[in-house]
Length: 285
Image 1 (spheres, rainbow, N blue to C red):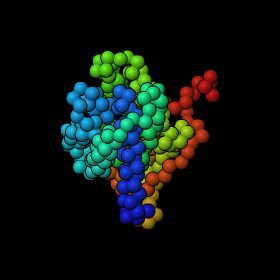
Image 2 (cartoon, one colour):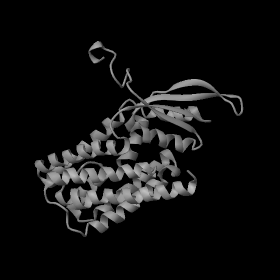
Image 3 (cartoon, rainbow, N blue to C red):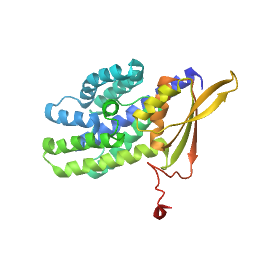
Image 4 (cartoon, rainbow, N blue to C red):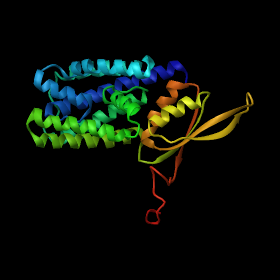
């Protein structure tokens, strides 16, 4: 795909993604006081206290986080993310003028969670993120590499949901928010990868050590395969790793940031046994 077509595709993905995300937040979650984690959840809490529009809060709160992201990962990393945040801000504040589509908190948790997840999925496919927790988690991982990424997200989200009990004074609403959080997590995985499964990834790059360093920072194990490039007859380190499908967008982003000319092959694996996957114990065979 040439650069012009890729730019158009990613722009469309960003527009669709941020609109769906905004619909989920403005027409389902926020009107029903459902705080499904993340910076959008914090924005909903502050909105309840201050009355400042959620989209505006989301944008303002992201500014220091984006600056931290630029410091740690470079301005190239935050370019498309800044656009996604800006679009989400505009759509969210516009949609806030419309009546909510339901006042049933359970229905809002399901539909809002699915809509937000679908939106975030399209943003990820455009090579961007929605800022907020994504950047914070990456920074924490640089300092605390032994903690799994999923655990950091879960801890942050649960703290935000817990604060919603204090702000809204209603534990039942917090339980509905937890449902929305679970639904959005499952829906996002399905939107991005389809049914759960494992993938084998091969990467041929001129900068294998830099890519490997970043993959290790994300708790992704790597094996080097020895190879040679026929066009220049030079030896090459082929990066090989086995991962769950959920990790693919992150791997693609890392490779694209370091070497956008790298050759990357992704194949499906029927089964994988070993650490992080299925156990070799007889009862699991």
